[in-house]
Length: 218
Image (cartoon, rainbow, N blue to C red; front, side, top):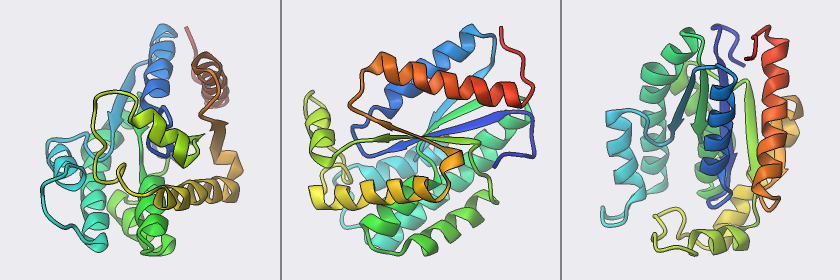
């Protein structure tokens, strides 16, 4: 947990097409109306080097990327993100909302790519110097529904999104296993629920966290 700084660190996790970006934006807007300073960010990315790594690892056309290289590229982006963006914001007392964090690597590369969840977690614990979210919001989406959402518009699927549903099924189960192992640190919600209902539930949980930390609202 983030016990070293006055800020609040929240990660949004889930399969591709779960609606993480939508809910992060909704939460940011609600918290800003309450008078809090919010930083929204994403992974891979969040820094200049992280955005370049994002393009290399997610865009098609860069040639074959083996599983170990993929995992290390995500970890490298996360190391810069944690050091250059997340920690400084938390030290300033801000609320940090990140679209993906360590759990995504554990699920996608550890389970999806079969590299081993413990091995991938260890690499990322080192990369982030043990920085953990205060809360992880897991939006649970079935692989078929996630693909339907991703392909509904004109944007093409990236390298990971375009993997088979079996790959995404392993990822989904890994996320659920992570949440089951530490239920107090997770808020698990069905992604198919109405957007407004999800947003209200997430805000309520975050307000409880803020209150328990002695943060005044409004």
